Image (cartoon, rainbow, N blue to C red; front, top):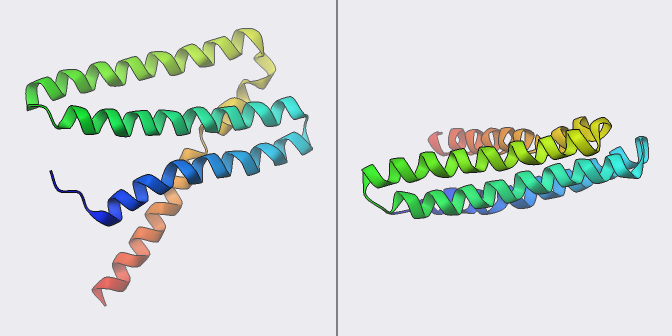
Length: 130
């Protein structure tokens, strides 16, 4: 299955951008609130980064199989990932209930990173067409 080099470059860059954004924003949260809040913010971003890397590598392996097995494996993989993420959130809610928002905000740093990557890709695509 051929891979677009630009797409591969973007997919390699996203985890670095997510962990970088989580580190910067975690540091800011640590200075604004308390160090534990900053740590939970960073931990959320780190989990999002690990989840992205795991999902990318697992889907690459799954899609190399036949279609029927790929669909079953993909669904099981996604459900397993979902259960693990919910387990981490539940653990934090039970142990540190006041820090769950910081963790969720850190976990969500993947969203602005994707939005920036989309905006940059669209801007480049518009340049290529002219």
